[in-house]
Image 1 (cartoon, rainbow, N blue to C red):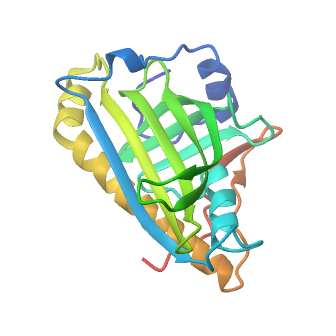
Image 2 (cartoon, one colour):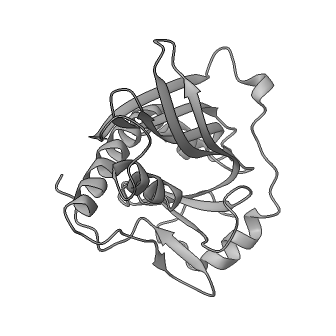
Length: 234
């Protein structure tokens, strides 16, 4: 697969079939030292009543949006995947955008988080989410975790992003220089932007709007997320 292009991926189904044969390029045992970044962002989405998540409330809405990758900003990153595939093991063809370039990159969902856990301050959290690892030919090596977390004591619902990453080997010298200069800045902007996007979308659904779902792009169950028709307040 080409590491860059000027136009969107023309055949997402073929791209997904190709990355299905790719191996992971991330080894957790090597994730340390110079060049590795460890990130964590927590962003408040809403506040529910204390206790278990409310049926149809912000936590449940946010979980559904996160499952479908309906928190991203299409101007930075979109994802193509088979909507009918199980979450764990799902291959996703990400398409990053930078100026006039489109950067296709493969990732694979490696875990689902669905747990209640104790905080250091004695409070209890209800968490759901998932994580992916990068595949061969990705511009980075690493793992990214997306979680929707409710503090059952305070009722606060947050979007939590945890990542570990490092630049992968990039053979194109121009792309390598560009990634070195702009990659980290873009990565941080992505984290901030998607946190606000998810808050916008949760609020819109709570105010009576339809929950956005990925756009079918075919064939069969291939979709692209986030949905094109959502208009953010930001």
